[in-house]
Length: 159
Image (cartoon, rainbow, N blue to C red):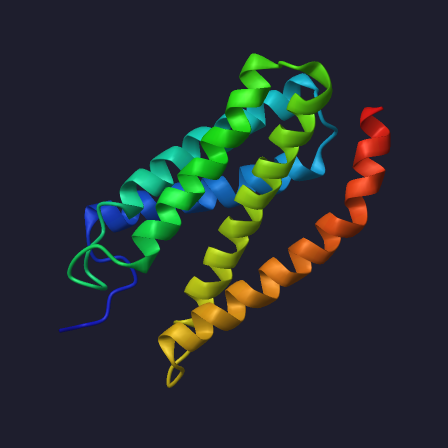
């Protein structure tokens, strides 16, 4: 069996929405918050993540059934939905923004970890789960340190 980068239509769909999510997620974290552009790109990100995760739940080639990455897709869906609900409801005003920002930040960081894992697992002669662990661990550790350090600044901005 030949090793194709994208072998099935669901894989192509998944890949396309992964690229859209990476671009829109990076943009939405980079742009000024609360603007019309932020909201529009945020909706693109949320929709692309929804479609990315739903397609992930339809890919069974790696484990021939439900596997660890399906659980990761469910967790990813939870962070996106959990991050969008406060922004859509906006109640109570002082806490909705912090909850929205926190969950969306971790959603994007999880996407970065998945992207790095995908790249590192394609390096020949490397252990699959070792590369997933290294990529995810480094990205989430760096993201956690940054989040912890910047959290106080963000809270001051909200006051």
